[in-house]
Length: 376
Image (cartoon, rainbow, N blue to C red; front, side):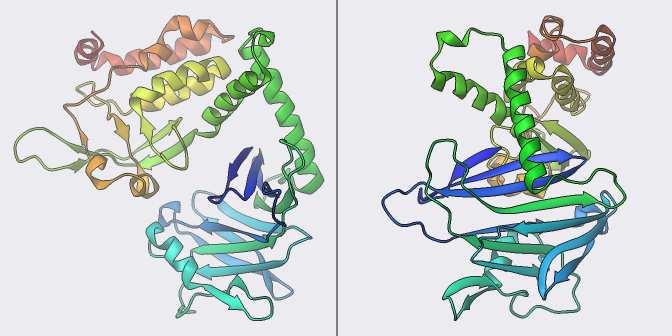
């Protein structure tokens, strides 16, 4: 669950996520301005099918002349469907289906599909952007729901549900959680988090204020929520005269991030310290992230300081910082996580730990001279 404020500090917007193979995202809002009457709030979500997803295709689901969802296919996900359940107290609901050539044009495409409702004098998505070629296969769907959020009554008040976004894979048993089932499962997961936090970090909370204790839980929660998977090629340049940037081999990276939305990339120096917390919380999770980082090591024992994979990551980095210089390295903070003492200070099976260390040693055996030189 994540709560953020809008840019004018008028609302708190909370997004909650529950997965069961399939998944559901619930977006809620509450007014934090107690001096003025609540104003309407429009929330727009978009679902974008990148060409990297593998032959993507989708068709809208129309009910009562309104688009309520879509059925799609990608080679990675197979057949699936996505439905949006707006609040029953909504003021208006609208949608827009379009084709965007690249992620950089998503905002421009949405703005090109906004119109004005004369009966309410409110902005609305118009179904198709201006000049849209109906023969083109769309690859993006915008959905807008407008509500008037209630005024916040206490610090934990999530406010009014704006919408639920439900994803299900065709043929999978179980299905996503929605409405009352979503609330029940979210409460269960919240209770499990607090219980696990107490077990993994057994400190005497009576020595701290409630605010300090909550801050530590928020920090761990943000770390877990910032985990992400990226795929692509790093741009690397050698210091040799006349050398040009070249693409590294295509690779995946599962890593924690300082902020998944603002810094969607991996930071080698940071990850060692991320791993110290992850190893306490979930040793398998920590080892998986370390394994991904070590798989990026070249034959000289070098790993990029920042791993910027895919168009999303590159769009968030100034061009002059995208290229990584292979003569510049970070100290090997990953060694903090690989340290056997760290792994054995938490409940963990010997066989799994041994298997991971064997994998690590296999990688390091190819690069020991360089690795040792950097380490020393």
